[in-house]
Length: 300
Length: 270
Image (cartoon, rainbow over all chains, first blue to last red; front, side, top):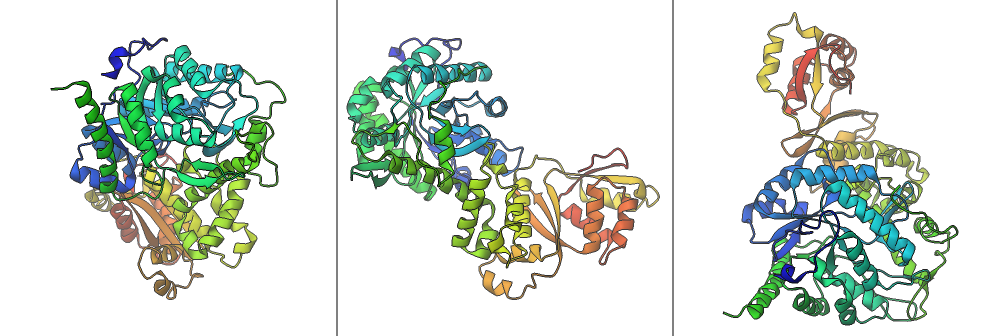
């Protein structure tokens, strides 16, 4: 297991693993697929939900999530906490998260190194922050508060970004490593985001991968991107979650797995959602790569 | 309490946030790119993500409004709404409560006077879809009540949370229903939009249902939802055309709308 050689985490929840998801492939849970999942009980390692979609009082979403959760491990993935934001955390939103986590007792809770709210406005996008001493302190204070309020360690996801800041003087792998060191949170390694950001900023994703705090990885995300160009004609990849995983991302994923060991891996698809069987086949592809790693590591 | 303040004058995040929804503002200062490409063009990706994702959220909530005016008109109208009234909460199920009022005041849509009320119906459907679960009373509970006419007028009705009534000058229930079929155009041609209608929106099991109510029945149900006793509600219903007490109670029962009965004055208004 990858966890056996992880550095001991710090912080008040050090004794608790940041993620208890099985080291196998999972899918994002989409309402379009509720009935297919209940009918077929697919052999997936876990399902992941966006926390905010289930912050409703009752009705079909909770009905189906309760039934599906009874059969599968669950990852709760927040998109609205704005951990990378400049303002204070939204305590009312933290309260809603606590209720959701109490209700479904997921094997993992994760959020983003990004911001999505400012003042009284919620932007429904994962927005970038400069990386410097001030923002590092703010992000760590936010994660400390999240972990304290929720009574558990969380995973923090590396972002897809399209711009960089003049005010940044720390690079992303160091920034993430320092967050993990100071807060004891785990890393949700989004391999697609790593590929997208490195492409968009002229960096080598393989070199950057090796500098991430890989001992803290509790989950991997894979997704598809869309192609655009910047004003000089260089590729500008958009994290669309609207396409199959690209071949280049599968290859980078293989390299990541070699460094992390087997780890829970999610296929993310939030737009142009295909039939459930199509997503299952993509998850099985990730599962095959995890299994191949097990065979390599433990020859019969 | 839990976040240090950032140095005054730093462009991020105030300028960044302000520029996301205001196309007249320049991209925020302080952005850079590895290859000297234009940061403003890169920033436009965020602008587009924010605007399009919020328009998409509205399109999910208001599909019949979109069908009535067409995708291009709807998205242009929604874009103006998103810029004027972005969500305050990351729970987007509640985004759109102000959209019907915006539609009502949106001058280019003035030729479709029923559009705002159809939007109110669609937003009510989302609220009912996600409303708290509750156990409705069984059908024989009302039969027992009707068998004791002496106590009936003094009772109030407790409604389940997943229940809402809309009263409109326009044929909102018929307009909505026409878009649930494969032949919306054919069905629409048989509807007089100017015929006033009332819609009871309730959840049966996991499905949200929309039922048209006569004016008298709607006045009766509205009074009950306001906390009136059955006696008071019957008087109000009888003052309008098309009131049928047994029919109205039967409709509420069939819609799984009734959570129970309480002596009037003790019930919760809603």
